[in-house]
Image (cartoon, rainbow, N blue to C red; front, side, top):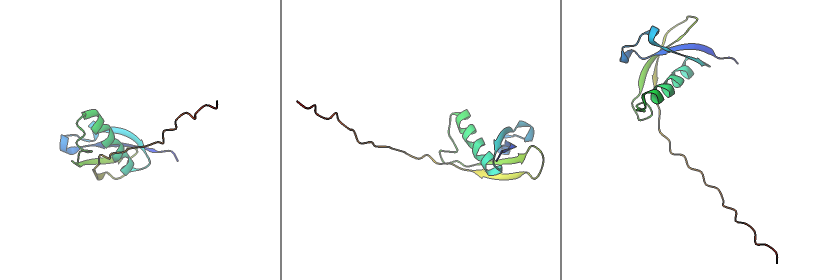
Length: 92
């Protein structure tokens, strides 16, 4: 399924729809999540993933309702372990 293009903006930062960024997404929720990922990375401060939710507006560029979304995130520690295989002893 091809995604739709949405524009996402953050009114708390004085933004309007003309300041919004465009994202191709499967729906408004996905577009808001993509915006959060972009916003945290672009600001290099990671407020959202650090526990400060953001309220954004999301609208399909082809029209329709404007949706207010609250975006939050979390930092997850992730580890992996692998068995170390040592070389088998050589036959004499």
